[in-house]
Length: 210
Image (cartoon, rainbow, N blue to C red; front, side, top):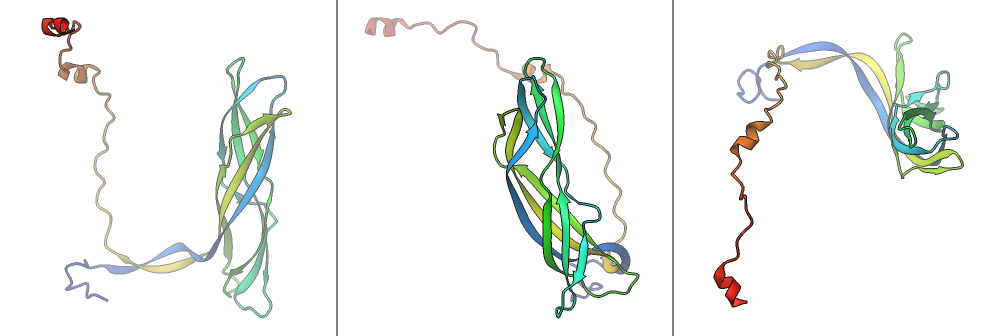
C-alpha cells in the first residue's frame, strides 16, 4: 500500500463508514419466448409503432429460500418473475395512437445461490434486474400482434451492511448550468458564399471543336 501522506500520486484520505447495499452473490440467465401474442382492438386496421418493456419484478409470495443439505452457506432459491410491457399501435384510418398493456409469460427460477449464515435480525434480499427486447418484427395475425422476445436476467443476493471506504473530502461545487439557447436562423446563412445565379455558358472553342 502506498504511503498516502508522502506519495504525491495518492492524495491523503480518511477512512469513513457508510451504510450500503452489498452484493454477496450474483448470477445471470436468459429466457426466450418465441411467440408472444397481444390481442388488438377489433374492427380496426392497426400499424405497429413500438414496444416498451418495464423492469421485471418477483411476483409476491413466490419467493422460497431453503438451505441446501450438506452445502453450508448455499441455499435453493425459487421464485417467479413477471415482465410487463406497453405496445403502441396506430389506427391507420383515424391516426389515433393506442397503448396496449401486456406481459410476458411468467419466468420460473429454481437456482442455487450463496447466502451466508447471519444473525436472526439480519436479512438478505433477492434482487432481479432485467433487460428485455423484441427479437423480430411483430406480425398481425387473426386479430393479434405476434412477436418473439428475449429477457436477460441478473439475480443478486443483497445485504445492507456498514462498509469502510476511503474519503477524499466533499465534492467540489458543481459548475453553473448551461442555458439552452436557440441559435439565430440567419447566422449560418450570413457566412455562406454567394451562389452563381446563371448557368455556365458554353465556350466558343468547345462549340467549334464539336
